[in-house]
Length: 238
Image (cartoon, rainbow, N blue to C red):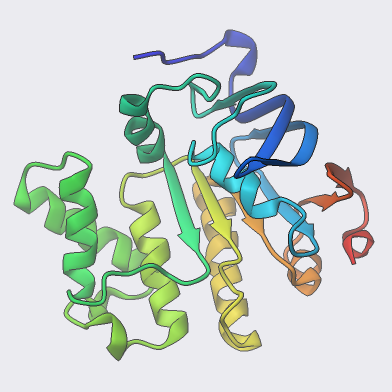
C-alpha cells in the first residue's frame, strides 16, 4: 500500500499543493494550496458552482487529482490505487447534506452495516461501538428507530454518529445544516464544535450560511473565480 507520511507533516491531516480541482472534465479551482492540521475547524464558503463540494470529493478520492500534489491522512492522492481508496476513507468521517441513511433498516443496522463493511468482525464489539457513538451524539435511545421515524436533525445526528464509527481524526461535512431549520442547524453545529474542541477532531465544512462561521469561529476559505483563498473576514465570502 502506498502509504505516505513525512516527519515535517506531523499533525497535518490535509495538504494540497498547487492542486487543480476537477468537476468531471472541467477544472473548477486552479493551484489550490491547503493545509489542515489536527484539531482545526475550517469552513469552505462561496457561491454555488465554485468548487466547494469538488474539494471534498477530491479529498476522499472520488474526484481524481491530476495536477499538483495532495496528501490526506497519510495517503498520497495523486495516483492513488483503487484498492487503497477504502483504507483512505476509513480514516475520514464524511457527513452529507442529505444524510444518505439506508431507509430500509434501523439506525442500529445502518451503523452495523458500516462497521461490517470496514472490517469489524466481532458482533459484540460492533454493538459496543454503536452504543458509544449514539451516546456521543445524544441519540442512544434511537437505535431501534427507522430513519423515516426521525426528524431531519435526528437523522443528521445519526449521520454524524456514522461518521464517527472508526474514530476519524478528520470529518468532512458537505452542507450538513443545509436542509435543517435554524434551531436544528445550531444543534448540529454545537455537536460538531464539541467534537472539534473536546475530542480534537478536525472539521472541514462546506456551508453557505455565513452566520454559522460567525457563531462558531474557524478558518474561512472562500471559493470564487476558479480559486480558493483564506479570508480573515467571514463576510467576505458573500
